[in-house]
Length: 420
Picture 1 (spheres, rainbow, N blue to C red):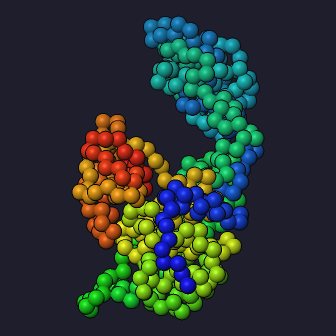
Picture 2 (picture 1 turned 60 degrees about the vertical axis):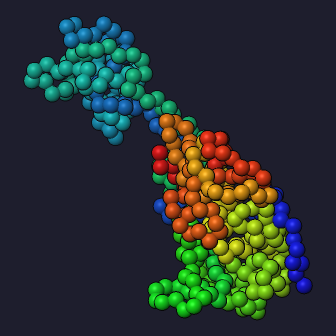
Picture 3 (picture 1 turned 180 degrees about the vertical axis):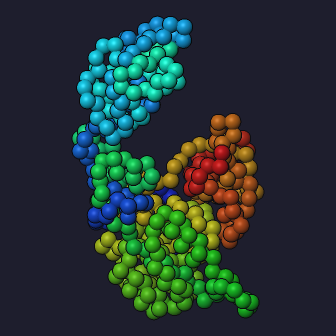
């Protein structure tokens, strides 16, 4: 028999229980070009300095900076060109006093050179082409280190600039490729299975029969998971029948790390999730959360597998997925930082609703205005309001019994990019 009256626990307590339980999946090796979007299990160590030699940052002439002192268009410093070093080449000799080396961007500087004079600050005599044996007129002085990147000036040999837990994006891929990492150790992505419950749900086009509604939670959740690189096995719609739910979820837990369902999680006669969890002998981490929307949220675990039962109302699923499910999947995928970013902002719009004993999370649009965050939650906040998702890139956290006024500072949870 399932206990019907369960006292909801605070939001932060529920999140603590879930994230304390979660562990990253096992590591596996993947070619770098197949690891984009994955989280590093270990930090590759650089086998050499970057750059591996002193190099030019511009096309120009490698010089001794002191020899250019006082140079001007009226009184240029004249240096003899000793040689030319292209990118991929190597200097034949050290730079001698009174000479310069014509050099290309990325090419190694000769020993003795401590700066590069860019081509715009150098003039070749009429008919000259900048070859060895010719001269160049330096028309502006330079300083030691100008347009020169020293050996190891970017990254040092033996360092690990991309930390374990970092997600491999374009910047990380560039650094890892520079480190010669053709293959990297990444954490296995958690396998996710998704099912919606409810005899009233239909998918696709066509007229609705009386009592039917279209399935919006399934597409919404699949899009949220896919947006972060998580593959989903779609179990489809489950009927409001305990035996069917027990069989489907039991099978899914054999293959998936996390099973996510929506609906049938409250205390009605057709809410079969609590009974199914008991039948499957799962340990319930929590059965209700003092949150609005999303109070019936229930999480149960067995060994290293979890069943997250989201409420069926679309807004409840939307909010609790961002606050619980996505952070859980990120941590299981090996992310060093899995939590949504939290900042503060000035409230410029609010819904017409009364304070409550639960922590509320208003769907909102946050943006920057004159260098500060402003957030507008002036939209419907009902659990069934699908239209409230449009333009939502943040939640406003409203503590129990609080009623923030327009103009006040509030806590903002970012769930999408800032439109500026």
